[in-house]
Length: 274
Image (cartoon, rainbow, N blue to C red; front, side, top):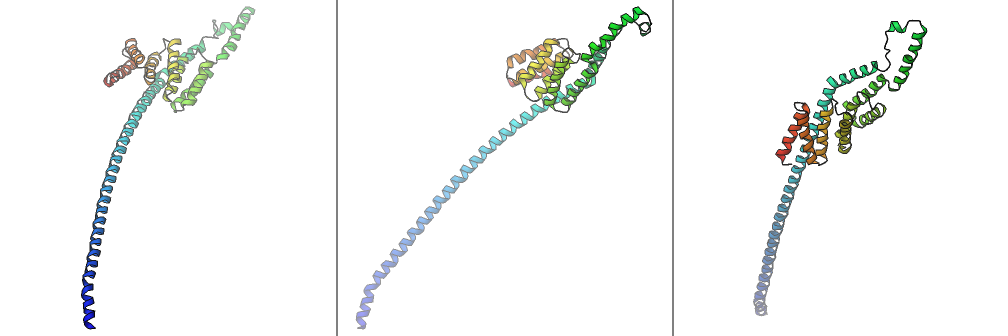
C-alpha cells in the first residue's frame, strides 16, 4: 500500500513542476507586457509634454506680439495727446489772448458813435435826431453779443482741456453755428477738429480742418490745421495725399512749429518705407 502511494506521488511531481513553470512564464509575460505598456505610456507623456511646450511657446509668441502692438498703440496715443496738450498750451498762452483782443476790437466797432460823447450830449434837436440811429445800433449788435460769444467759446475750450471731447465737439459746433464770422471762429473750427481727432473720428476731423483752411486761410491756426490735415490723411491710409500735405506745410510755413513737426513725420515715413 505504501509503495503504491509513493509511486503515485512520483508520477504526479513532474506534472506539478510543469504547472509551476507555466505559471512562472505567464507571470514573466505579464511583467514584460506591463513594462512595455509603461514604456509606451512614458513615450506618450513625453509626446504630450512636447506638444504642451510647443503650445506654450506659440502662446508666448502671440503674447509678445500683442504686447508690441499695445506698446505701439500707447506710444501713438501719447504722441497724439502730447501734440494736443502742446497746442492747448500755445493757445492758452497766446492765441486765446489774441482772440480776446480781437473780440474787444469787434466789440468797439459796431455801435460806437462817431462824435465825442460831449458833442452827442449837446441838447439840440439836430444832435438828438443824429443820436437816435446810434442808440438803435447796440440792439443790432446784441444779436451777436461779444461777451456771450466769448463765454460760449470758453465753455467749449474748458471742455477740451478737461478731455471731455464729446462735450467739446458739441459746444464748438454750437459756437460755430451761432457765431460763424466771429474772430474766434477759426480757433473753434480747429479745436472742433482736434476733439474728433482725439477720439479717432478722423473723417470728421479732416473735414473740420479743411473747413478752417477754406474759410479762414489767413488764420493763425492755418499752419496747425494743414498739419492735422496731413495727420488725418495718414490715419485714413491716404499716404500719398498725406505726404503731399506735409510737404506743403514745410514749404508754405517754413520755420514754424507745424513745419518742424511735418518734417519729422515725413522722415519717419521715409524710414518706415511708407
